[in-house]
Image 1 (cartoon, helix red, strand yellow):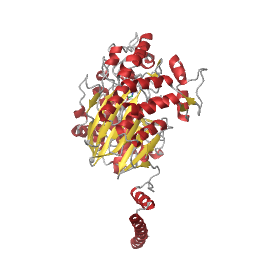
Image 2 (cartoon, rainbow, N blue to C red):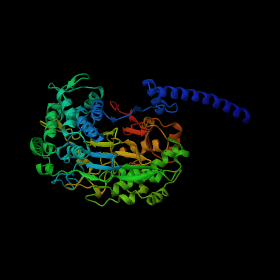
Image 3 (tube, rainbow, N blue to C red):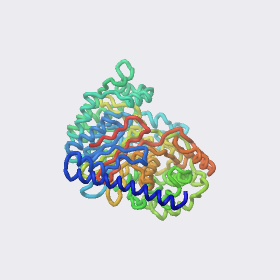
Image 4 (tube, helix red, strand yellow):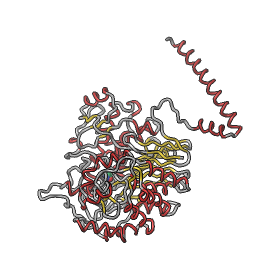
Length: 597
Ligand code: GLY
C-alpha cells in the first residue's frame, strides 16, 4: 500500500471513529442532563474504563471501599466494616482478625507482620511494625546441633521455633490509634465466624490436606483441624473453632491484656513449659509494637513507599528500582530477554547486599540511606553487563540451599475517605510451627527460623544471611514482607504486597513496574509471568509463560534457568484512578477475593 492510500484510509477510519465518539458523547450528554438513574449509570460508564480492548485481564471495580485478600469471608468482613462507617484501618484490623479464623495457614493471632497506612487527612504514611521478637532466653546458637549444623526440625517445628507474637498488639495498636470504630466492633465478625463456624471451601480443604501429616503430629493441631475420628472436614461441612472464639473474646474484652497477660498468656506459657519452649510471661508482657517511618524512593515520578528494616523489602524494592531507572525498559519490552536479564542482574546485587547489611535496626546499624541512594544505584548499574549474566560468586561469596516457602498473606484496603492500608502478616511457614496452643485455637509461628541460625548459610528461603541477622534476645528477625503503597502526583495510586518469603521482593517489584512502566491495569500487572533471582542460588527462576525465544536468549547470556517449576508470589492489590478503585487478587492461588462496593 502506498503512503497516499494509507493516509486516505487512516483519515476515513478517523472520521468513522469520530462520528461514533460524537454520537456516544451526545447520547451520554443528553441523558445525563435528565438526571435519571440511567443517565447516572451512563455517566459512570464513561468514567469507568472497565472494558479495555487492549487488556486480557480486567480488575474488579468499586467506588467507595474495597478489600482485596486471600480469602473471601475475611475480605467481605472488611468490606462490611467499611460499609457501616469504619475506615480503612478498622477494615484492615477486622480483616486481620477474621483471617485468623478463616485462613489458618497464614492468618493468625500468634504471628507478626507489617501494616503500612496512608492517612488521607494528614496526607502522610506510617508503618506499624508488629514483627515477632526473640524471647529473652534465646541464644545465638540455639538451633545448632553438636556438630555445629542447624537442626532444622528444632528451628521450624518445635516450641523454640516461635518468636513472641506481635499480631494482636499490632492490630490493636493500629485500631486504637487510627481506627474510628470500637475494638468490639472490629472483633465481632471474627468471633462470630469462629463460633458459628464456616463452610469448608475447596481452598481450605486443599490447604489442610496439603499439610495434614505435619499438623497431625501435634495433638492440639490435630484436634483443631480434624474431626474427632481424625478425618478431615469435607468441602461443604461446617468447621467451628470455639477455642479461638474464646481467645478472640478475651481480646475483645480486655484489649492487648486479653492476649499478653491473663488466661490466654497463661495457656501459651503452660504450653511452652510443657515442651522446652522459651516464651515466658515476661516476654509476652514485654512485647511492644514499633511505629516506624517507611522506606521511600522515587521512580520516574512515582513515589514508592514500603517497609523499613527489620524487613528488607522496602530497601531492596527501592534499590532495584533505582538501578533499573537508568535503563530504557520500555524499549527492551516487558518480558523480553533483555528486560528479564536486567531485572535479574539488579536483583542479584540487591540480594547480595541483603545478606550482609540487613537486620533489626534496633540492634544493628542498617545503612538504609546508603543502600537506597541514587548514586549508589548508578555505581551498581556499572557492574551490570547488558549482554551477559555475572556469576553470583563474582558479586560476593556465599553458599546456597533451600527453596522458598509459600507462606504469609497480604491484603490491601481502601476506604471512601482516601485512606489506604497495605498489610502483610504471617506465621512464617504455612501453619507456622504446626503447633497449636491447647485451649486457644491458635497456631504458633516459626519465625525464629527467619534469623540466621548459622550466619553465612542459607535459611528456608535459600537466603544467605549474615551476622546482622543473628539471634539475640528481644531482636526482630529479618523479613522480606513488603506491603507497598505507590503515590502518583502525591496521591495513593497503588497498594500491593505478597506472600512468599524471599520472592516477596521480586513479586512486588514486578507488579509495580508493570503498572508504572508498562501502564498495565492491576489485573494484567498481576497476571504477567514473573521471574526471580536472589543472588544465591545462582539461578534465574522463570514462571511458565515466557516465550521460548526469551528463554533461549537468556540461556545464551549465561543464565542458569529454572523454568516453569513454581509460581512466584501472590499479590492482592488495589489501584486508585479517577475516583475508582480497581482490585485484583492473584490467580496463582485459589480462594482470593475482591470485595468492593
Ligand atoms: N517469614 C517470611 C518473611 O518474613 O519474609
